[in-house]
Image 1: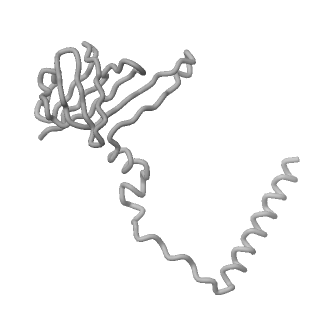
Image 2 (image 1 turned 60 degrees about the vertical axis):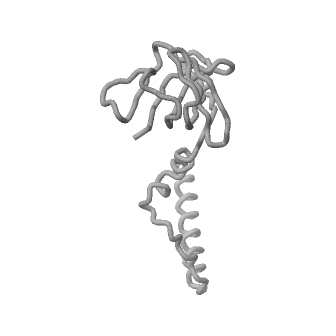
Image 3 (image 1 turned 90 degrees about the vertical axis):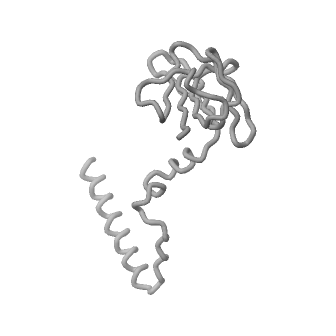
Length: 147
């Protein structure tokens, strides 16, 4: 059976190659290549540009072992209010989300080289907040990107 499949595959490759050669010999012009280089970051990772421009998102992942689902939420915007227990962020499209800040929340800033705390984040700062939850959002990570 494997010999039959191999023979069919080889025949298909030869016929396909002959068809391609015949098509190329007809003088039909080849399409012009795109002006975007294959070495640009967007060409290598087409979704990366969309992620960089995103302002907020919600997605669900599945834990294969326990067969449970986790709802993730992220927002990029400016801090409208911040306290020791919560942070509220408004995105560019005016969507506002409030996250609970817990002891497990990781906070990072550009200005501090070591781990930061929520008290280092100020109102008006540009931030990225990623968290989990559906009705009550819990911040997992807060990244203050002020310069």
